[in-house]
Image 1 (cartoon, one colour):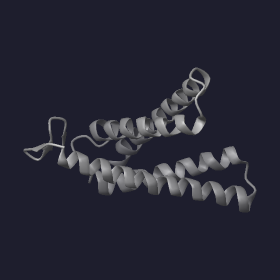
Image 2 (cartoon, rainbow, N blue to C red; image 1 turned 180 degrees about the horizontal axis):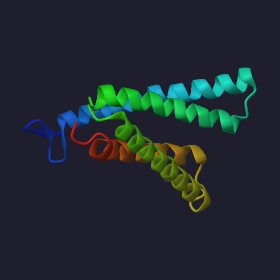
Image 3 (tube, rainbow, N blue to C red; image 1 turned 90 degrees about the horizontal axis):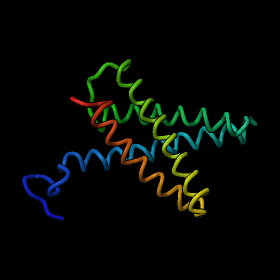
Length: 139
């Protein structure tokens, strides 16, 4: 890695690299919130798994939003604007994830976990870029 003028030459500033690493860590926290809700609802409240994962997804996304708003991007945007944009990005990420899974399994006939790992990486990077450049731009 070549570092020139506080940038990973020539692509990304050190601040952006730090934000990406924080964004990734926060994503892990949000995912754990999602899975905790999913497991609690299914195992202890006997909720339908599809409904439980949907509720868990919303909980995880809200955790991600709050922590990214406060920590990753240190935003001062109004929540009405930022939260709406954040959920648009999350929704698009879910669609992209589904398309990659569908193509990977249907066309490439690859193992679902290998495709999911690839999809997770793609969606992570795209969500970070969209949230940095659109949801929390200028903050």
